[in-house]
Every structure is written in C-alpha cells, then in structure tokens.
Image (cartoon, rainbow, N blue to C red; front, side):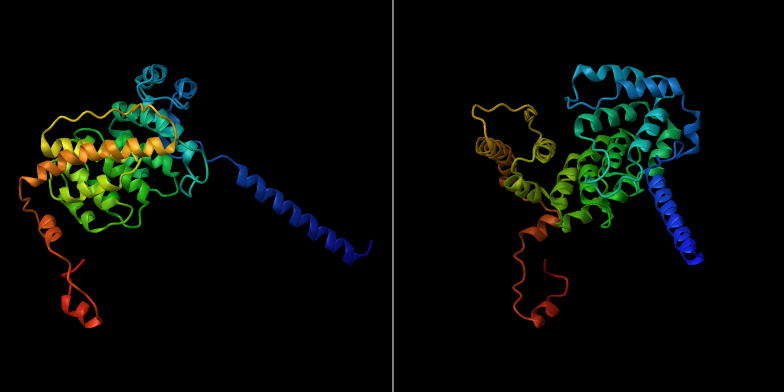
Length: 318
C-alpha cells in the first residue's frame, strides 16, 4: 500500500474514532453529584425512594402514594429526593418536548413531600437551581410546588414570575401556587395585569385576589368567559372569587357528567364556569371598585386613527 493510501486510511480511522467517542460522550449520564452535597445521600434511602416513587397516573389523594410519603419523612430524604430529581431532569431542556415527562400525578405528590420535609440547606439548593433553564420544565415546576410553603419568602418566586424571558408555563404554575405561601399580595405582581401574554394578566389578577389584593376583578370576570375546559385555571378563578366575595363555593375536581364526548364536556364546563362567574358578577354589580386598574379599565380607549393621534396620546392608551 502506498504512503498516500496509508495516509487516507489513517485519517479515516481518526475520523471514525472521533465520531464514536463523541457519540459515547453524548450518551454518558449526567454527573451523579451535580451538587457536592449529594455525596452525603444515604444509598439505601435513595434506593427505597426510587422504588416508592409515584410515577403512575394516580390522583394526589390516592393511598398508593403513602409508601413514598413514609420514606420521604425519614432523616436525609429531602436531599435524596432533590438528587433524584436533578439526575432525572438536568440537561433535558426544550420544554416538555425532550427528556422525561412528569405529569401532575408525579409532580404534585413529590413536590408536596419535598415541601414538607425540606430543611434550610435543601431549600437553599432548590432556590439556587430553580432559575437554571438547563433543567427540564417539569423539574422546575416541581420546584415551584416544593417552594410554595406557608411562611416562605415569596421574593425569588415573584422575580421569576415577572421575568419576561421566563417560560410562560412556568410563570403560570408559579402564579397559581404562589398563594400557598400565605403571604400578603406582592404589589410587584400588579405589573403583570398590563401584560396580556398567555393570559398571565388574568392569572395574576386571580393570584392577587387570592392573596388579598382585589386590584383587578374585571380581569377575573373576563377570564371566566374564556376558560373553556381548562380545569386548573377554573379552580384558580373559583378560589379567587371565593376570597373576593366571601361566599363559600363548592368546586369538585372530579366532575361527573351524564353524557360522554368532547361536546358534552365543553357544554358542562361552560355551564359550570357561568355559575361561578355569576357570583362574581353579582358582587361587582353592587359596588364601584376604586383601584388604579379598574379606573383605567372603565375608561374607553382613545380613538387612534393616525400616527399623529398615537403621538398625541402618549402613554394614555392601551
């Protein structure tokens, strides 16, 4: 074989080895100890948590989760749960289109268990990793559940909710669970009332109301008209309506309808939303809500027909 052919063979072998090495490297699992603290996790405890992990599509109240809850209350389980979550979801970016999925049947019980048992060090780690967008959105929403605990500082969560570069689904999850902190309504959230993207303005209005700030009930009323079959959003609106009006409202998460099919479900959902909307509408009809948002909401928008009209209006139009 000539020297030129040996050179070509050598180059080919080098390229093949490089490709194989790159492929193997891509398949390597994420580092076991993303945080140095994970080195202290008890291996037996971690194994038992993985075995009891609630991955099936079960309701939050299902007794099948009781085994996981028992193991989760053992000393050191908070760090072990966080380690498992980090290993499952780190590097799986791109929303829910890549990596492992986590439905509410998993996210809620795992997040709620971590919320109850997390010590100061684990809370610090969760707050450190929570803003990292290299994590799958399912992981970050689990962190939302775990961090929204009575008495906790809402500041870091509010900061993420206000970030316009943040994923809207995460912001939605944050706003719906923020009232669990049981803190006074953060005034900063009022800024979202003027940002009608992904219905975050309506969701923020309900969040504020649930936390004691009736700044924009008109937005909540409007949201009822467009809620459709969004079960989670409707529950959020009902809780806000109950806080505003002081009337106890019954909302069943396990609705039963006589007929099956999408049309029947849509009709039932609309009728149910209309009933709750009527409660809020009746409350609003008997009073004038004198808030900055509602005053602006009642003023007809300026009529803009030319560029000169826009310039003359300044900021005084929607």
